[in-house]
Length: 278
Figure 1 (cartoon, rainbow, N blue to C red):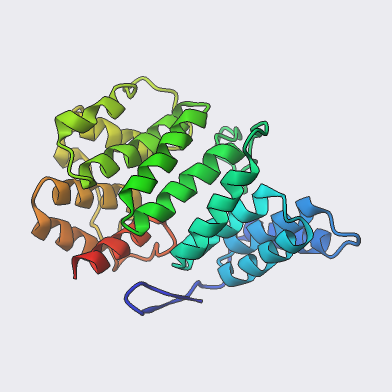
Figure 2 (cartoon, rainbow, N blue to C red):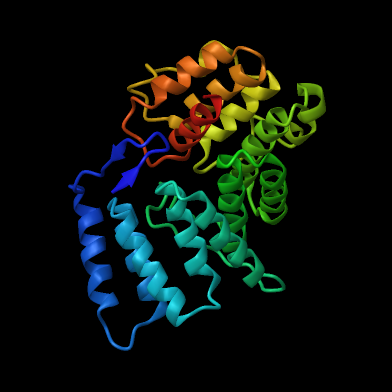
């Protein structure tokens, strides 16, 4: 389905999770209803993506855009999946379009396709648009525009989960722009150990690590290649990189690409960094 940035073919196994399959089947039935409800089109695309069918999901979101060209949600989700399939320029175009469509409009909670254990959504449409736009720019090594997008994502964040995820990227971006820890640490000031985190435990721990409140030896509990936590692995590799140990950074990034989580943002960022190091 996807070519990595180095040209390697990446494919998704057919889903076996019963809930994913049942949700996909239900979404497909609703999608086939006439006339098509934009909500049903959106959720069919989302369910396809959760099942690893990213190219098909992009086609469904494109259908939604044709019928509802002013609905920012279709650009937001298609942009997300363009990131997954490593088409960053297309992702940026979609997410910039989504950002323009939400100007002056009220924000709204974005329901989760895979709810957390508290069954409380932690994201909003505006936050997700800016977050994914920042990520797309970051993957292009365009740190200036990535910073602007993540600053906007922080501005519209509504909870501690939003704060810790965006702070992780804001800090890394400043360091990758050549700022020292002392010059970048101001973005870490709102982060504390007693925050109310429902989902983004990984990002919270990384932020505390950047602050010096979590020890290096406590950051990676599993072997890199077997780790399911690509976010932590990438954050650690990046920490070595901007602190001058590029050999160690490359070693960790290379190990991460032997993991199976090729759709995760940490994995994709590792690909992008290794491509830029050549």
